Amino acid sequence: MDALGGSPIVLGGAAIVALAVWGWWQFYQFCPHCGAPTRRVQRGWLRCRRCGRQYRRGLRLR
Image 1 (cartoon, rainbow, N blue to C red):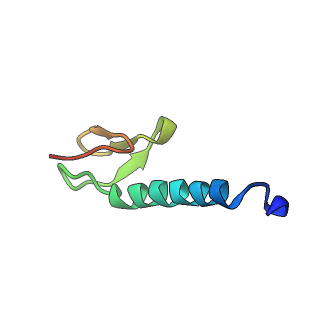
Image 2 (cartoon, one colour):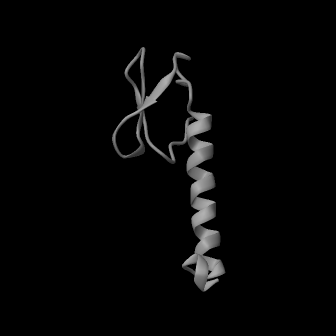
């Protein structure tokens, strides 16, 4: 594992984080309030193009 630059635990953790971020971006392609497409803005936040609402990673809708 030295050739890959880390232990299996570290690499596994990085893979899980990458998968979680990818899944979050896939889930929030559209605004849950108005249905318009979202776009990425700074530091991983998403903003709705129509209503201007912003969503951050880990947001839980009620």
